[in-house]
Length: 293
Image (cartoon, rainbow, N blue to C red; front, top):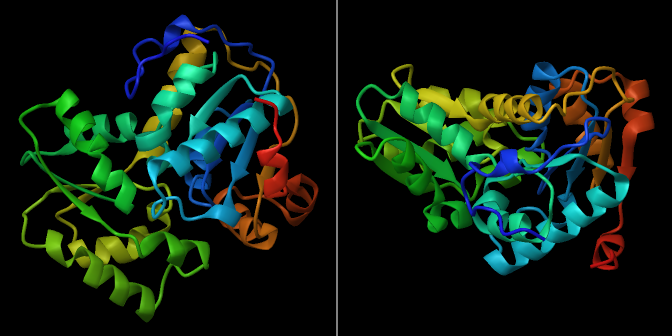
């Protein structure tokens, strides 16, 4: 396998892409469906194979070695199914596992940190950008590195919000309990006079309304989903990897609660009940552990 770049995407254009295969996307749970939804809207002819590792979610409280092992297992599973590229729709996995994934697999692999950071650097007017994410993502310093790569003069203020992912995975995205948790979690940012906030976890856009309510209209919220979709489009266009005709329906794989994934698919992917019943497949974690290396 080739030695790919660690966090940044400059060498991805050197890897050829087979156009008549689906795009593989994975996350620790349902949060990455925000990225899948953006890709589906940007590239309607592309078939998506989405994997949500709900049985082992959240990744944000695990160590980097574990997250990397889980990510390798999932990529190997998706490659067995046949995909032309991988989108790591998980900030924690992007921050900790992306270097190893690019080293190990000879396929284009895109993370979500760099696209979101570039967007924030363009949006900020005051040069004061906040980042919220899981404990592991924030501790990695990956967002500071990526934002400063776009503009070294920007001040970055990072805050771990470990309570957010469990809320989303439990289907709690609004209401008094959620607003109270979001308010208490974001309190340290309120005095820092940021004008832009990166939602540094793909689960967090599902909490966009309570987050916006706490921080107010003066703070722009940046989700990496749309920027990542544009990055996927750019890469496939450069490599003549775009599908001319739809290959088939999107497929969704989970190690956990298929009903919870179905709820999010219905609201975020506009999937019908028939599509959901036909396209969701539960995967036992043991299957991932026994995948060929």
